[in-house]
Image 1 (tube, chains in turn purple, blue):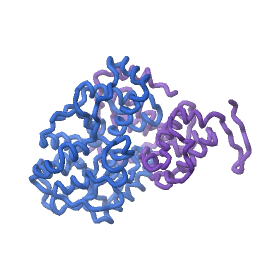
Image 2 (cartoon, chains in turn green, cyan):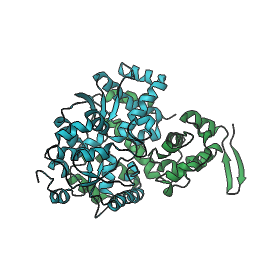
Image 3 (tube, helix red, strand yellow):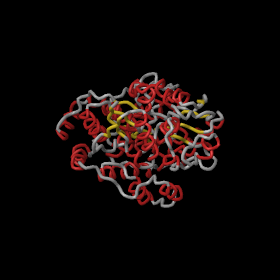
Image 4 (cartoon, one colour):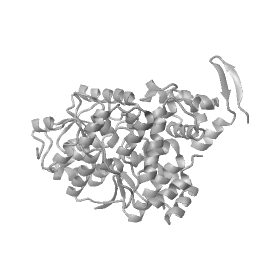
Length: 190
Length: 283
């Protein structure tokens, strides 16, 4: 169905019919059960930094404001701490819904203000595809290069290196072919 | 007792002290930990945040490898533990995904694997009675707060471990090794996890709140069971923070193991505290 543009009190809103159902289908978690008691938002440790509180994201999914949600910071800032999922009286699994929304944003190539977080996830999985395990040095170098934030944490990084917490060389798993097959089979977001 | 063991990437990197103290402590307790052969990264936040199927496939490879060992699987990292528990459920519900994994690996996940976190193993399988008997160096006068963080305990339907709002396992373990476990309000707060590398400002605020709560409770140190919790609390508070231990390090000290190689890796130096109480060996 075609998107509908309406003029609301906050300006123009684009409604994407079928979006709520799609999120429901992909996350499998009953987001229409939410009656906005705000327990998730009250207990969320990151809500102070979000542009929309967790329950507002659910409301926006219910209203099918796809563009607004997928470009929000909130979906990327969710730390998957599971406090909301644990406490929700209606068993809405918000962390899984947040993951679904992030995956949709990746698939549609939608950027948010949280470019460093989006870059982090990409370079993390690149590193994993290459070695089969995490190698902090490769991850940090790639992250710094892409985010152009070269000097933040430089001192801390050096201290960690001195403490032997960051390995210079990566270790690759033996059966990297099997991992390549896994990436080939499941690597594309859908 | 023989177990299948999944350390996770951090235990060979930023959390080396967790890895080495786990090995030494388990050996002392008579546990034979056999590493899952050729394990891979569980996918962590980046996996489940951006690709549902890939994240479960990455975890599934480890579950299938572990299942072939025919032993219960013990996971040291809280995040890996949480991912494995979720994937085990997903593979049962999503037969198409499991069949695909079976085609790739030769056999699918049969769903027989018992997956437990290392803290659960120590507190409930080994048991605190048995630990008490083996303590040779009780950590007397050490005032600690147990910090569980997020995904070891919640949501309970996934973790099947302890109480999700008021867990007690680590509290009891602290008492069993002769130290004092103080009541406090921060035990299940979130440290910000992987935002540590991307939104330092958020993690600094969260860790400050947690460490300040520990200080208010008059704790001398914080005890963790997760590589990210330890790293964030140890590194992101700044000056005048508290030492942040892995529970395996303190258990090891209480069992009389020389812990210098673990304790040397901490960012907030734990030696002044331990030597003041005459608890550090090997300095």
